[in-house]
Image (tube, rainbow, N blue to C red; front, side):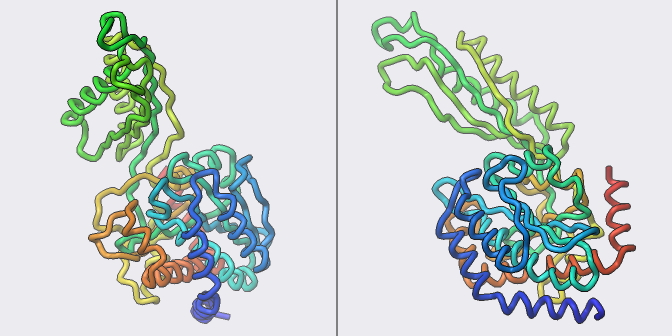
Length: 389
């Protein structure tokens, strides 16, 4: 069977699963779970994959809500990545119900390619992208060491085959002071909240002297209980981002100086902890070109590189530094709708959201065809990856 005929069958396969995939997406959307707590989402996804012929290994990389679902044997091994965590309060304001459902839909449809040409298809369940970097942990623990190529599709407001993600790292800050009555003996206290506020002022002053593509943002998570007691404890959570990995290292040191200076000025004791680090995205343009061609057959006016110069951050970046990968976008809403908003959450279960999810599944599975049917193409993907390193 030639690849064009096989791709046509894959499109039919996804369309035949429209009702079940739409229901799966809707169920995940209506039952949002935060990172590393996605027990029900992981169960729904793995049940669907088991029912469609995949063998499932739950709890991979010592992460209870991660999973690896496999079909076929031998190489090449192509992975399609699923995200299924939600945001606090907003729910699926980033549309991870679409990411996970398109991944399992593509995996099941791609069985046709595996049966025809051999190799293996993996649907990798990757939890906690939003807040904790599940793929950072999974990459460090070797989850992708045996993979030949990895792909995923994120919902958005543009159709594009790549993303220029910022490197980023979270920073948890604590200041410890001394509480006293704020009116009777304020001179005896050490105000931990003032240390945090000084830190914000220092960071705000620093912003005009950092690169325009860098970002620093944070929140105060603790800052006292009552106004008539000098706060003895304050805490905050910050994210530092940069377009280049080496500049992130430089920026981290400068940001930390802001907190250390505030500690010295206030007398409060500083404790800090850096969280998981998201790498920049290393886009494989050979794979991206294949994905673009497949999306265009579905009527999508898609480009290899989007109109935005850079986006947010994704732990797919870490994966892309150990295996050839793409992080594509499928448009499910107009440009006036912002990610991480209630409006985008609504779009993720709209009719347009369903069509985007199905198109993503089709294009992912068709790209699997391109990779397993042509060893020379896969070699070109690997060559570009090695050169990019």
